[in-house]
Image (tube, rainbow, N blue to C red):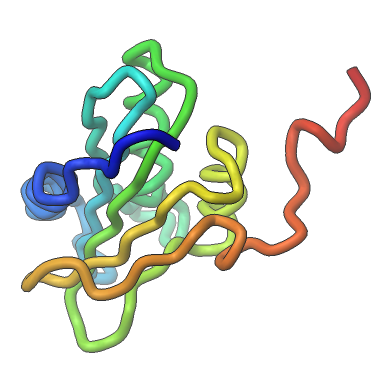
Length: 136
């Protein structure tokens, strides 16, 4: 990865979209913002469903926005949630992030006050299964 991503812009985008989350059942709003290889920021928020727990995670929404915008590689992602504990991506979202990133991709975990922790994808999903595992 080349230059350090603009963490302030990613955090601001994740925080703004978190407020738009649709979470009437859990009342736990999550926002995510991805920096694509094209330099654009792609936000996403969680969207719940009355058939709870069926819904979409913030990271999945941000990845969908990135793909719809034409980018294919995650350079960095910020995930924001409220509360004292770190709100890291769920297992399914870790695998989704894996599909579009490299082991060194930074995954930044934030709370309302700012970035709380920084992980690489390899730290959150070691020895992962990805596109290279499949025959060509």
